[in-house]
Length: 213
Ligand code: AMP
Image (cartoon, rainbow, N blue to C red):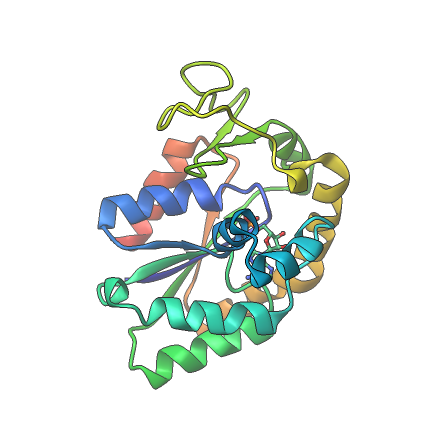
C-alpha cells in the first residue's frame, strides 16, 4: 500500500495521513516533519531548509528527492508507506516514479484532499502544533482536551511560523503554481482519487478508507 497525500497546505493531509498510517501500520513520512526535526537539531539540511520554509517557499527539489528515496527504501516500508507533503513538484513526482520502478514497488494511490482557498486561511490561522510530537489541532474544529496542551504528550502547543497569515498566502500561491499540476499528472496515470476535504475529519477519513478498500 503506497499512498501519496495531495492537497493545499491546511487541507488536512497530515491529520489523515497519521490516521491511515496508524490503521494500516505503515510509516507516515512527512517531509515537513523531517525538515522541522532537522531545524530543531541544527543540521546543515535544517539550516538550508529553514530559509525557504520561513518564507513559505518550497525547499529545492535536490534537497528533498534523495532524502525521500532513501527513506522509502528502508525496511519498515516493505509493506507500504504514506507520503505527506511529497511530491510537491513535477520533478519530485518523476523522481519518485523512478525510485519506485527501479525497486519494483507496487503502484501508487494518490489521494487529493480538496478544500477551497477561502477555507484554508481560516483553518491555518487556528492551527496549533505540538513542537515535540508534531500532533496538530485546531482551536475551533479540533481543540485539544486541555486548552493549549498536547493531548498526547502534554507539551504547550505553538503556532508554526509558516502558519502565520502572510506566509500562508504565499504557501497557497506556491501550491497553485507548483503542486496543483500534480493533480493532472496523477489523473493521467489513472491513480488519482479526490476527496471532499470540507467535511469533518471523521467523514474524510471514512471516504479515504473506502477508497483504500
Ligand atoms: P508541510 O509541513 O508539509 O506543510 O511543509 C512545511 C514546509 O516544508 C513547506 O512549506 C516547504 O517549505 C517545506 N517542504 C515540505 N515538503 C516539501 C517538499 N516535498 N518539497 C519542497 N519543500 C517542502
